[in-house]
Image (tube, rainbow, N blue to C red; front, top):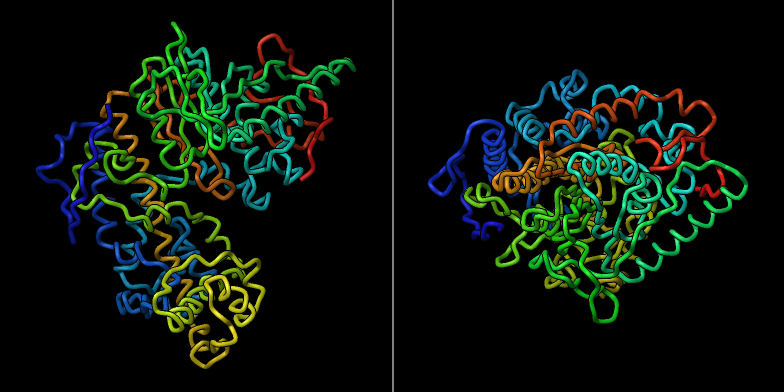
Length: 552
């Protein structure tokens, strides 16, 4: 059972350890506990920066909250230099860009980068990023089609998802074999792209569980399209390395409090009623549970099912939407581990958890390119001051996204945004000297947001480290793997856990990674390569047909 949630005890300068902490064992667990304690302390020290909303930059004078030496160093730094000095990994370029920065600012950057889980791919991939415009090498020939995924499995699937399902599918297959699993359950399966790859592409028995019945119907329709295309190819005598067995789709939501229940909660939307729970008792069958970007509490529910149900032999979880986590008893999804729950000051605000979902690598790319999109935060911050001046009760209201806001002048942007909060643009000074003065401070807004963004990986690391510690406290083998290319898929850390030794699986994944990145000759051949991981049972290896390829 998961430990009870504990109320946060904020502290202006929390210690690393205290009486509330559990005794720390030696070895890897001890190192993970120390990292969690260090992150909690660092986040507490910089909480005003982490919890600040950039739209309040002018309204709350956020720039004045920075140390004077930081203000002087950052006020006029061009965006490309800011990217190199602040957000990019340590190296000669970063050191040169920040050569005259105050030591406290350099220490802030070094600490944040040292404590965050590594998100970058292995070093040997950097040559591909340099040569192929930042995309994984599988997209060298076509930026919208993975050359390592069968054309029938690419239909309806965006490039980012193609990259994700192929790499996660290989992990699931390896883990399933190592744990002796008979069945895979994909929770939060959406339109079934991962389930389809696991079943048709890798020959695994799969049940897909999705709470939105409309998505379930779409997934079934896509399965039928694939089967029809497969039958046509076979009728022509073509050998296609796909299994003819698709996934089973179930509309429903797992009950995280009753993993052995025979019923699923009703789907949303959908009629009342339940279906057989694929995680319920299944005789001697062993289940692998997976979730690709399972939103909010769902990613935690997967781990709790794994811990509580002996039928679940392994789990892979790629999380997202941390701001949707339940942080209050009794349905507490953070913290999970006894260790993090015992750290004074461990609580994370909604703003901090929201920040953990930002794409740091993408923003660094905008800085490097000195993109016009950088002015969007400044526009919104100026708009916030106008809104509050007109009506002090309207603070931090949600303003629906203005398309291509950076391509507009500020008055044009404001005329679109103000009516969305019930204000008349004609009644407000949109081109006053005060507005122009704020707009001239765009670089300060960018620098402040970049500082806060540097803490985002620390928050994500703490949340995932808490889950890792929770599983280790229960005695399970587990690891966090940077599986996806972070520039392509920002939420790229997958948590894997088993009831058996995990070492051989991790070694095999390292080999898979090397094969993926060193197989450029396959992608230059002009033909699609066969699916990774070998042919499904009973199917020969063959070069796939290009029929059914979707166009990006």
